[in-house]
Length: 104
Image (cartoon, rainbow, N blue to C red; front, side, top):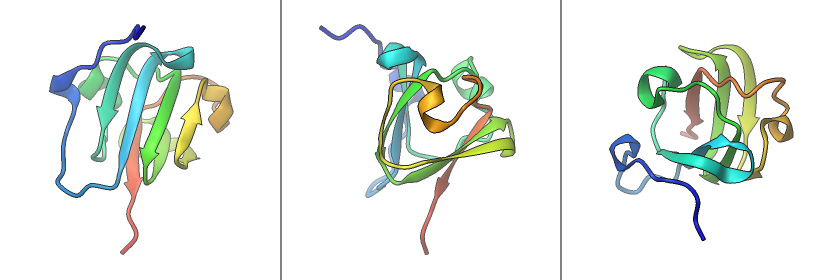
């Protein structure tokens, strides 16, 4: 049984996008799920929280930043499943901004 809610209003779709990350408000993919396919300079403004406790990187490589506007501690996120923030090296669940790594 699925115990999380997808917020369709916070999901973006880009035709042919190879980048997608699903963000969760609790460890082990619990709570509300928020899908992202574009850069997000301010996680708090977009999702009303800046604490991401787990995530699934579906496609592409991403950078998670501790602060908004791509500042502070940075974490490289490769495709895979992260059941808690410590698995990506985070000292806390705080994620202020998220950016795609795009190969040209």
